[in-house]
Length: 482
Image 1 (tube, rainbow, N blue to C red):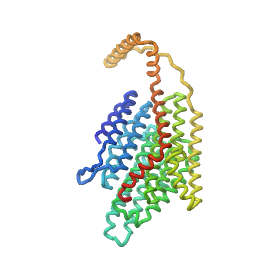
Image 2: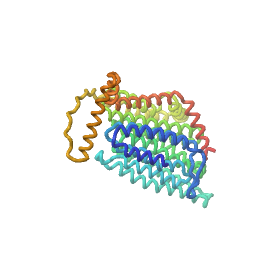
Image 3: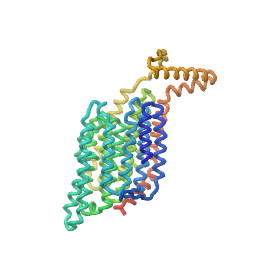
Image 4: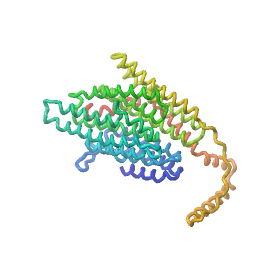
């Protein structure tokens, strides 16, 4: 927790100077991933509550912090870096939601992190305030609904022969989670939110923040298994998943705005997650875990590539960003070879054997996402920037009139004169290379980051057994599975 707060403070201060923001983002990413992997398996009791990370929660935290750090690195390339610190502020409370063994505290921690994300949406800079305001109101309403549903679960032992309280609990839980996860038909806030949020915040909210709601639901099911045994919770998840897939695919087919395209494509992936969870088996839960990771990875890769392309007007960097964006989009659709394809088609083949109408409708929804990706790709190609010619050095400016300005001016002059004397002693080849790196360091490191993201997506796609085995091991240790 202390490392997370320190990292968020560091990034919030470092954002004022681009090289420092980039270096701090890299260091904080490595440090946070190391810290997440070093958390022990024991539990601590504080204020009557137990805190500890289950294996699945630890894996999710490690992956989520790595993706959050990558988004921070990508954001540090741009001139607008207001959201840099907010990429980690939410995790200071989301860590509580992952670790606490109390549904009420977990809900408060989850919605607090979502409220922090609202601050980072920058509605004023987008000259809009509707989406952020809608989402903030829904956070308050949904939190109350979730707490009411939990209270009905607690009261159920008073009437063990009647399941009316459990049915009411499922109603309120589905309503509250449906509002915050944007499950169909509660998707009205998703589009306006996407218009006001930068792509990294969209990936943070949908890919990394939303799955915490499903984790809290599983925490509650582990404490009250009757929610699965004696209610229609699985049916509710299946209906919500099918509706999310159909509506999301239809909206993607007619969308050209990248924020809404990412949001609606993430809605389609969320629908498949719900369908896997609705199966109520260990295999279905493991495939849902894989789908959650694939969704978070794809949205983060897409957001990072878009952010870098907007920040660096280099044609070749934009081509590379476009290629990485397409890799993330295809992985989100589930047609990349590997574990995502296996998880997606395992579910599709079940519907093909039971109800072909749903099977073909699901294929049409995936086709809608592909159409949306193709439309946005063509728009991206049309707006690729031309190579910016090198500009001559600007004429020296006169010293400022203020005392602090004069001090800075003299210090800068002394540093430039010292650098000039040092350059005279350096070989011309090394000097030319150093100048090229200094002038184009953003493009160089952006290309390295994009190449690493693309390589990871490809490696992730060709190593399905590794991810499937890990998902089965961690899902098997969930309380209600045991």
